[in-house]
Image (cartoon, rainbow, N blue to C red; front, side, top):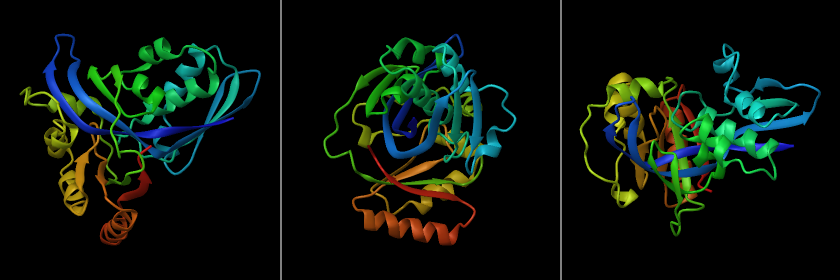
Length: 255
């Protein structure tokens, strides 16, 4: 059995307040790409996880992760293999998308919503992996129908620098810049603190200048560009890859 852990994008992300418990109240629009990590499972008499793929090294020091936690929550016994195709600590959903893929793969026929909520704020959105609005911590999910969004060509670019979510939220200046109404006119309030931590993000956004919309996703450092045509996306990808050979560049489409 195989399941894709679809890469998550925040088309807009407004941080409204820092709560007394240290969490943040946000308003966001989630969208998901066709590409992602790949999780496979084969029957076994105990639970195990092997990690392969170009970014497997980034998880080598983790004795436990969200995939195993999701599997244990279901009481699953299987040999799991996670092909890590997406960069880690990159604003693309990462472990949350992988955990959601594990729930879909191992929990068929079960109500997985409550389990997803215990695993992390982004896991409920990643469980459905469909365009949605997220409020609260991002875990209050409402499906969102946006005409013409599915199939939109997307270019993902990461400067090769991991960026921990907690550090970015801590660096947020605490200023409420207003609600999220129309995502196209929105913003990512985490971009400014992320750029202070990883200045290369400014260069990534500049390199995506040919896109119709270019923003940072989540807490970074991955940025995305939405294009009107696949030809435009492909031309931008070729130019960026030639100019910045050390950056991670991936072409995909929105689901």
